[in-house]
Image (cartoon, rainbow, N blue to C red; front, side, top):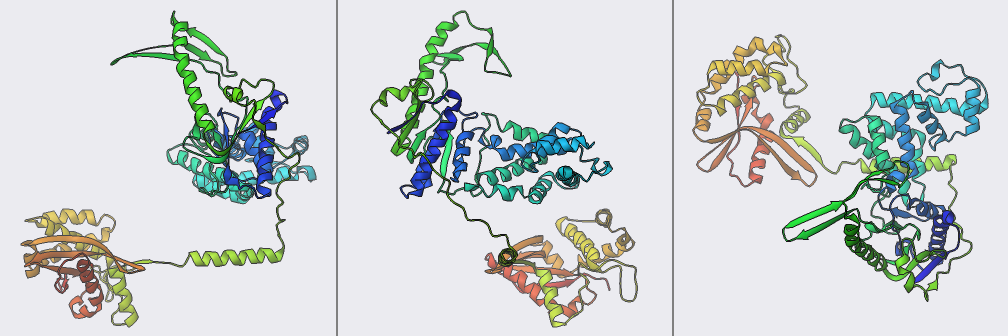
Length: 585
């Protein structure tokens, strides 16, 4: 066990504590004594206590994984996106617009904004084209930013909100910039914010609602976590509040932020007597601007109830301290303030720290050096070549999907054995000519198949039944109604076929969908028009609306073979599938 004792003022305490912890970790890793994953930093309080430590670690290029209520919403990246959403949600909100211009997306300084205003500029991106532009170089960046925001505003009106936000982040380079931080926590927060916006908008919310949701994530009660760009990375320093540490361990644990404690207090007292329970509580009104409370009412004996409850509250505090102190496998470092060593987050441990050694922290620690990026022409061409090669590799299909019908048409065309089938989806219903018939093409085939399915499913189907169904099936192809009687005649004629009678008298299935793996990298799917079982054998019937389908049976051999293989794959015994021509002439 070690201590990290601070003699500075209270206002400087948390910053000094964070700097020394970061310096110690940096020195230990640079000398090869330990790795980043050896360290765990715990704070007692939730709100506003984690960010200073995350900033100190980032300043020394230490990769970090941050957890804890409010850590996500408090990040600078999420706050920048929140301001952007508020500005895009309300173009008339000049305060939000100025906040965006001054923020990290554009980084415009106050003198530049002042010069822009002095030149009679308006803080409005929707009226940017109407303003008289000066040639003052001090205002050039403001004009460029307004033009960009005007473009972003249009994107939010023609694209889904999350898609528009992704394009904005790409256009500004903000995501790429965030990804340069150690551990990728900042970039992870940016991507997480995009996902949060998507969730809100898909639930019917607006951009303003999405901004409110991100703002709410700053609250201590928020369960939204701050995630790194590559979740699951192990070589990082973990930083979290104590409530998140249960079950975790590390070789070196810091109990940080010595003044970030919680004063034990009882807000409610409950007495249980067997199956009966009674409770007492104070009624207070909390102040929005401070931690002060106004008492509205309490039980006459509340002091006694509070005294009875406090031992339980203090016992819970002791339990949390036990959890904190037992997270370390090798070294436990307790931060404390020399002016009030017995108070604060870890004050209860002070009596046991009198003879504990002080942690030795190097006086001067520098961030690990980073190589300067080569942005020259040759480097850019090489990067583009690598990107194109990687893109080509991942776009190589490792599997394919085809249908039995499409495969049959493909084989037929490759062998030039037949002309394109009338069932080809590229066909359309046109007026009768010597080369085109209304009773041909996909629409006609769909009508016939629908009527045949209805006739097979239902006993004693009548012509009127088929006509009513046909009217529904031709809603999107009204020209087919001219040949609806022909279609009905076709179905009634098919219903007289022997194979139809055999199917009706047996266990049968219509429009049976299937899908099976043809090989290690191909999946074939399709629909069997009619199948029935007789004497333990399954018979497969495929309807064809070709004029001469029976004369061109060889063209469909591959398709029928696919149906047979599909049923065989599930253990069924199949007779040779057959074609049933459904034509009246």
